[in-house]
Image (cartoon, rainbow, N blue to C red):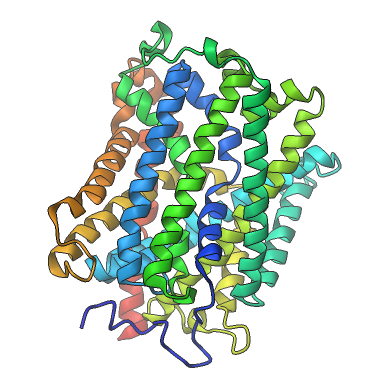
Length: 484
């Protein structure tokens, strides 16, 4: 019997305390696409354009991030088909490498990645709501505290979505289907407007040569890696659908299908959206877009004075759908950890009527609310980017390990089956290497380390590893005093 087959939290468990398989392929694909599309596609291109300096490089970065994301999704599809359990990536890590790596992943997911992203997206939602309703101010309401009307509203949005999702995954998935459909339609309209009304594509510099002032800033591989981080994490959260593996019908077929359909749709929209930006705006205006809001600047060309309000409305739809998808799926990891005895028993409880892990949902809300009110989520997320990438790489290495142990089960019996995960490992390792060491390839690294050490990627990457490593003694203490 394989490790996955011996898991205690399977689809076949008929008890009232079990998660029930109720979702089809469309809902699963909407969780993939809806969780991926937040606010990144509307702002990240400005930084990429500033870093690399040509339209050709802008599209190359998005294409690289898209291909890498598709490689990851296709590879995770094999793991999801082999182990369609609640918890997804946590389950994959446990099966391939054992309890400690899986616990460390769950640890950073609970303390920073999941809850930090929820806080960040919720605050982003309220910031764009503030564009439509100026009374939603970001100014602190109490001296010396970061709490504002926007952060309080962010907590309220998190509370309402948590309450709604606690009524069952069918309701959460229904909401996700609606908002994913709306955001896809909105992106299609943005693309159609950009391609129909713009006239700049023939004037775009499609070359892959760095202008002198960019080249002087450092090795081109470093610049490309740094620029790719924003695009890569704008397409992140594609793996979240694996977290709900225990609640998908025919998961061994549905999950791989949903992963491919969801990621292909999003990456195609991202590439077309950037063509729309380039068609409406000269590169210089993309680089200098106010507050990096490239999409807003682009729509303002077509709808003068109305672009800001239009894009604020679209981003509200996008961030709300992203928030719901991440909130719905992420809680299932903590449920899986509790079932394995790595979290308190309450995390493994399921509501007898709604069959949703309500304690997990509310615990997740509680910590995300604290991060939203404290204003620390942004810095924490900067720290954890490197660690999140490392966990992707370790999971892919785990797939290769499982392929050697149970090749038929993971459907990797031919040499060419290893190409996708190996290509992902190569691409992600390239980004990870330059995240950690890229600062040393810039000509002014000594000055930067002396004057701004805390914001270098070297420091934030090490800080992320330290936050992850902090889970090791927590695990040791848990095993010693909880299980003995």
